[in-house]
View 1: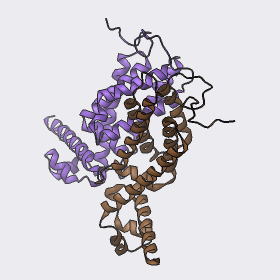
View 2: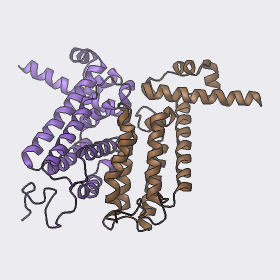
View 3: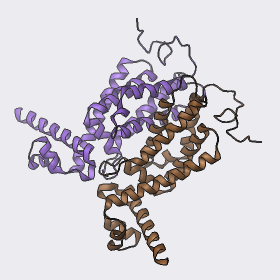
View 4: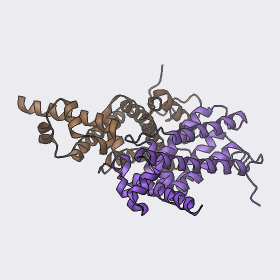
Length: 211
Length: 211
């Protein structure tokens, strides 16, 4: 059991080291020796856990996908309104991107031409955003002239942009920049509402009252 | 003179071949032999024109920057209203990205971790978008609660997203998707206007009348 725990820990250290090296050097330039050294393990230990660099990249992407899944699950518990969920998840995801190399590297691998990734993580993200905006449309929360499809494309494109630009300049992953994005977009998605209505659900129970 | 023309033509063929190989394989994996073969010239000819792979990448980015500059210059001639200019330039740029590997590769190199690019092309783009939205704000064309800064960040992030996502799925670089993005964003930027007013300048002369 102790042996299994040690193996699981080594595997996790390798995934974290790989994420750092992928984020810094890109997939093609990343060297397995650099990764095993950074994880503080031998090349043999690396090859015991991962057949090749593509398997390591897949593990990074899988870990990032699990983190994304946990974030969306938590938001589904915390909110009853799909637009609140969407805004909250983008905030949690962008914060996590700024803090956690695995999430940043996972999304980065999706757009690395040299990486054989199927970009499933990005597909997951797009599908989730489309689902939430589709639900908001069904719930009658979108303005009459706003299509869920166009809204989803805009949110997906902008969040991908924040992630890419954040790789060179961390200000793109700041709370403030994302808040301003939503201050701009949200009133357009929901249409004119009573200013007193708290949150995009229009005070229909989605957002807890600030009292 | 004939010799100079031939040299210029070889140089241009090398830049185009390099753009294709960078777009397909990424900077780190791109091989100079593949590039010279694709251009139909010898390795010696390549090294006569370019000292190394970084110099080739710089030439691709410079060419893409020149194309972007020509697009923005033309739009400045065609429109008197900064928001019309902005919408028109994004359409021309995205169309060009879909059609021209040099533009696509130029922007792609800006986000390639392995490439020593200074990402000036992306900086040029951001600066231009900020300039146009700043001008629109000065001209009183933005709604009272819309800041030029937030609008510029959203447009820059979304266009970077379109470019990145378009690398895997060309639908992201379609006219239709970009039009829907503007249908969503533009009414928010300008605020409520008379439906009869043609274009974001509100019929103030920015858009030619369709008659």
